[in-house]
Image (cartoon, rainbow over all chains, first blue to last red; front, side):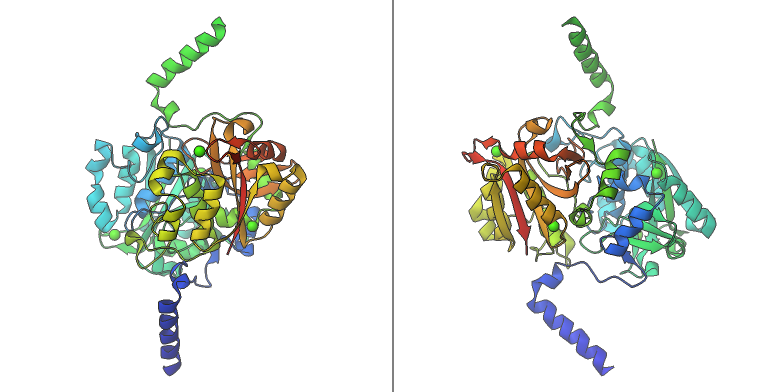
Length: 238
Length: 238
Ligand SMILES: [Ca+2]
Ligand SMILES: [Ca+2]
Ligand SMILES: [Ca+2]
Ligand SMILES: [Ca+2]
């Protein structure tokens, strides 16, 4: 494939000479609709299940390292729920959940240590345990246990109500992204296109995207070799 | 005022016994409309000048200390513009502006040092200088130099276009908040109510709010004793 090699070489050379390319997120597969495009904006305006969007977007954060997607997602949801946060020296007298104070409570460290999460991320069960350690009520759903209709219906019902939130644990590759297991909150559902809005916490790598329900469902049914179980999602409330 | 004293004491006692109160942002003056209320959401849906909202909300951050509002606002706008970012050890090979790498460039430190900003914040002129040090084109407007109609028109024109952004430097007290000088990006304008949406970067203290144009204009015409000039706003592009 001479032509392909030429383009790889050209892009590589361009990226060496143009630091701007490195400042961008990765290109998106055509199966995904970026949130900040005119199509993506329209999907939000039309959405009839977007109650969670406004509360979550107010709390949107970037994961502080490349293994902290579960911590970043949890911090967003705990702040959106308004649960009591640990102290932070820099914000006194205010309190807010941060990726730095997330492991301050002994109950949290007992689920898994921050050092281990920084190395290998967390499993779906650990995500549920960590949220529980901060006083949230959590239901864990494994991808192996829900069919497509249940998946859609559980998430849509949640997104239409302000007092609970959903976080998904999925394989990026299945939705057309690079590449491994990932965790992020879901913020809205568009019924016309049957798509969910993922507020991707690795904001340096990908923007928020609208993903087809069937693609996301297949991505949560993938096997996580760390747990020996499938990925899935959690529903979280006070 | 016996009754008033009773309520102060009651609230104080409640706050000692209920950590949840400390997990909340401060109450809002009735002159402000919180973004994540049904009224606030409606103002965004109706808005005809909200192009900047989607790009900025994707980059929304919390200032990392109580003097870093100008740094946090700049990071949001630089990332929304897609300007070339310095390296971050934790995000390699990706690049993104963060409040940690914002002062990595020598040109930035020459405007003002991060140590000084951490102590006293920044003036409007320093905000402009710091954005310029990262390759942005910046126009600085002092509150003393723009009348109400100019203020509204300059911001609305900007908010309707995706390739430029606006950051305001205002006195919180004038818009009914606690209390000093502050800096945050503006994300949308609602013509029916004549209000701008402030994406307040001190998210531990206040949520995003819709503020009346006249209140915000009066708040940028206040004197900043650090500069001996009024506050104001900057318009920023590539
Ligand atoms: Ca893993
Ligand atoms: Ca919900
Ligand atoms: Ca100051
Ligand atoms: Ca603009």
